[in-house]
Image 1 (cartoon, rainbow, N blue to C red):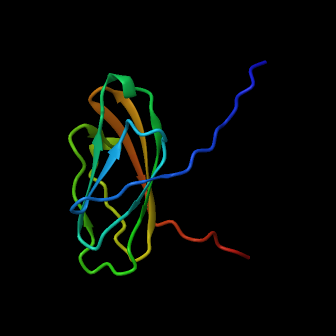
Image 2: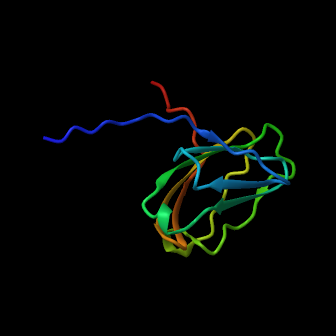
Image 3: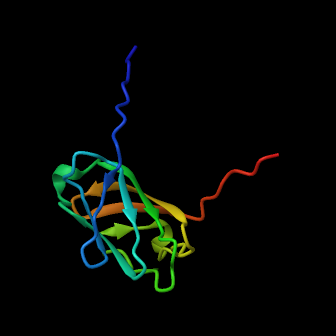
Length: 123
């Protein structure tokens, strides 16, 4: 019987540069945290190559408390979404969303977006 050990890794915080949040696939962790800026945000990936095939994880996106100019730019052509659909990002104040990703080839990242998280209804 195989025993699997799950190692919990902290979220890698992405620091933006001019509202561009670059997920470095060469980073030690698999899970990332982005705090969106009240501007047009771009999410990009770096170090996408054959050595990253199979890497998977989650990117947690937290919106700012003020969202007058909050928006998100389309992802790069290397990103593939279900049905080739453009992501409709939640741009509400303090909203939390998740991008799950899987690197399936040296030039392809499979992406799934889930947004509008809220507290589970209590009885």
